[in-house]
Image (cartoon, rainbow, N blue to C red; front, side, top):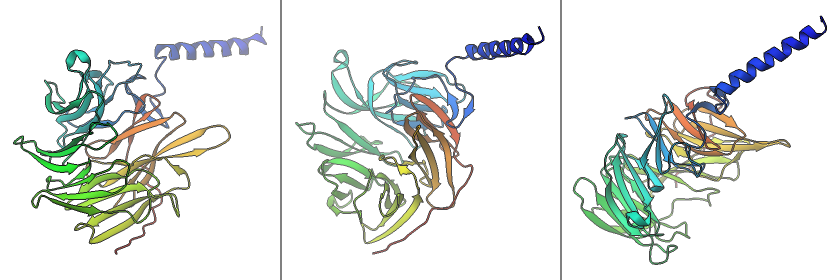
Amino acid sequence: MRRLLPLLLLLLLAASCSSKSADNPVSPPVNDARGTAVGPDHVFAHASQLVWSAVTDEVIGFSSATPAAGAGLIALRVGDGTARVLDPATPLQLALSPDGATVYSVVDLPPANGDSVVLRRRPVSGGAPEQLGAAPDGTPITFVLSLDGDWLAWARAGADPMDPGPLVLRHLSTGDTLEVGIGTPEAIAPDGSQVLYRPDPASSALRWWDRAARTDSPFNPFFSTPAGPAAWRWSGSDPSALWDHGSPAVSVVWTQFHNLGSGTTYLSVFQSADTIDVRPPFWSPDGSRAAVWTRRTSRFATEHLLYVFDVFGALRAVVATGTDEPGAATFSSDASRIAQIFGERLFVSNAATNPGAVATRHSHNP
């Protein structure tokens, strides 16, 4: 009997642990290397875009193909994991107004609702959508929203979905529209006074359009071919871009352009011995921070690391790691937190902890 006693104790302990796990079978530990889990699995698609509204404290994104909380555009409350369907139509692109109160989206309407692709906006707190643009079914629409929330540059493809189509600038306060040209928008000035656009989707060439003069000119921002797509935004009167430089060091480069390229500041703001994922970095709302995924592979697994770095200061931190496939990330309005997808599960991490080594900076002013 004495010999059986330790075995009985181990069996009782195992049964107790199994019972506790059964109470919440799908939830990982509240805190793990991926961050704090929010909501169940399969709320968001792995490839979903994400935005975070400070008005409702919800992360908004595209539903999973095996949805756990409804299909369409989904809002998931960070505090308690409550999910709701914000828009049942199939979402294709997503943005949030600067005040966090309005969501802009491109959605694919089913035949019963028009069988078309539309650009529309709706209040995050609830309400009917307002249509801002439309295109025939299967025709891509792209858009960018100004930081003052009052200007929207959007374009639809041509007769062939692979060809560029008309690009227009819409003043949201008045509804007035201006023709910019043929192409797809890349970035817009905070007050809508200038638009960067790509005339040919297959080319890296850009053009710079000025609203006051109604003119545009060629714009070539890069000193070398980027290893990954650029993440554009506008800081004050100057456009900025982050992209994966790739060579000579694995790094993310921040390039800020002054006065239509007459002066340029070129800074290596993040360097890593790991491989940087070929996807655009994620900007914080105020443009002071960004996040990027890297990966390191061993014989046993590939580990994905989410770095947050400050383009102006010393912050450089790994805020989440995991072996699940990573997806999009989005900052809270004050950039103190970041939400990220691993697999099809949302996690939230502190975006201002564990500062590491400051990235090496190199400047170049032609």
